[in-house]
Length: 74
Image 1 (cartoon, rainbow, N blue to C red):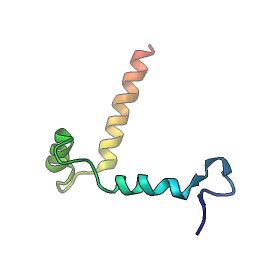
Image 2: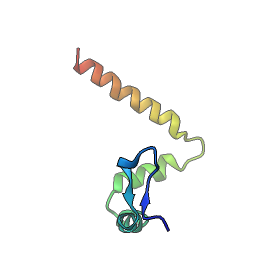
Image 3: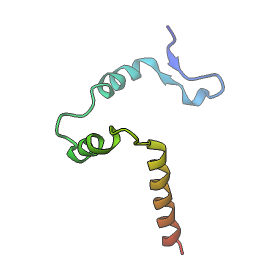
Image 4: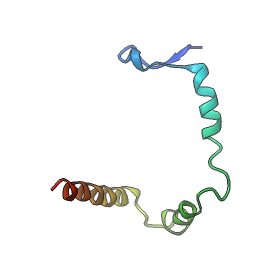
Protein backbone atom coordinates (compact mmCIF):
# COMPACT_ATOMS: atom_id res chain seq x y z
CA UNK A 1 0.00 0.00 0.00
CA UNK A 2 1.38 3.45 -0.82
CA UNK A 3 2.34 5.65 2.08
CA UNK A 4 1.45 8.91 0.30
CA UNK A 5 -1.15 10.21 -2.12
CA UNK A 6 0.15 12.45 -4.88
CA UNK A 7 2.20 12.14 -8.00
CA UNK A 8 5.81 12.47 -8.98
CA UNK A 9 4.84 15.64 -10.87
CA UNK A 10 3.72 17.33 -7.66
CA UNK A 11 5.78 15.87 -4.82
CA UNK A 12 5.14 18.96 -2.66
CA UNK A 13 1.45 18.07 -2.59
CA UNK A 14 1.80 14.53 -1.28
CA UNK A 15 -0.60 13.71 1.55
CA UNK A 16 0.20 10.95 4.02
CA UNK A 17 -2.37 8.17 3.57
CA UNK A 18 -2.74 7.81 7.34
CA UNK A 19 -3.88 11.45 7.51
CA UNK A 20 -6.69 10.86 5.01
CA UNK A 21 -8.59 8.22 6.95
CA UNK A 22 -10.06 10.51 9.67
CA UNK A 23 -11.09 13.12 7.11
CA UNK A 24 -12.65 10.58 4.77
CA UNK A 25 -14.50 8.91 7.64
CA UNK A 26 -16.10 12.12 8.90
CA UNK A 27 -16.73 13.66 5.45
CA UNK A 28 -18.83 10.69 4.42
CA UNK A 29 -21.23 11.15 7.33
CA UNK A 30 -22.59 14.54 6.31
CA UNK A 31 -23.74 17.25 8.69
CA UNK A 32 -25.94 16.54 11.71
CA UNK A 33 -29.68 16.58 11.02
CA UNK A 34 -31.05 20.10 11.27
CA UNK A 35 -27.65 21.79 11.09
CA UNK A 36 -28.37 23.58 7.80
CA UNK A 37 -32.15 24.01 7.43
CA UNK A 38 -31.91 26.56 4.59
CA UNK A 39 -29.65 24.30 2.56
CA UNK A 40 -31.95 21.33 3.18
CA UNK A 41 -34.94 23.39 2.03
CA UNK A 42 -33.13 24.52 -1.12
CA UNK A 43 -32.10 20.99 -2.04
CA UNK A 44 -35.58 19.62 -1.41
CA UNK A 45 -37.51 22.42 -3.10
CA UNK A 46 -35.20 23.22 -6.01
CA UNK A 47 -32.15 21.07 -6.66
CA UNK A 48 -33.95 17.72 -6.58
CA UNK A 49 -36.75 18.85 -8.92
CA UNK A 50 -36.77 17.73 -12.56
CA UNK A 51 -35.21 20.31 -14.84
CA UNK A 52 -32.83 21.79 -12.28
CA UNK A 53 -29.43 22.26 -13.90
CA UNK A 54 -26.59 22.95 -11.49
CA UNK A 55 -24.35 24.26 -14.28
CA UNK A 56 -26.89 26.92 -15.28
CA UNK A 57 -27.37 28.01 -11.68
CA UNK A 58 -23.63 28.10 -11.05
CA UNK A 59 -23.01 30.31 -14.07
CA UNK A 60 -25.77 32.72 -12.99
CA UNK A 61 -24.36 32.92 -9.46
CA UNK A 62 -20.82 33.37 -10.72
CA UNK A 63 -21.95 36.23 -12.97
CA UNK A 64 -23.59 37.92 -9.96
CA UNK A 65 -20.41 37.63 -7.90
CA UNK A 66 -18.16 38.87 -10.70
CA UNK A 67 -20.49 41.78 -11.51
CA UNK A 68 -20.49 42.74 -7.83
CA UNK A 69 -16.70 42.64 -7.67
CA UNK A 70 -16.43 44.71 -10.82
CA UNK A 71 -18.86 47.30 -9.44
CA UNK A 72 -16.98 47.44 -6.13
CA UNK A 73 -13.65 48.04 -7.89
CA UNK A 74 -15.14 50.80 -10.04
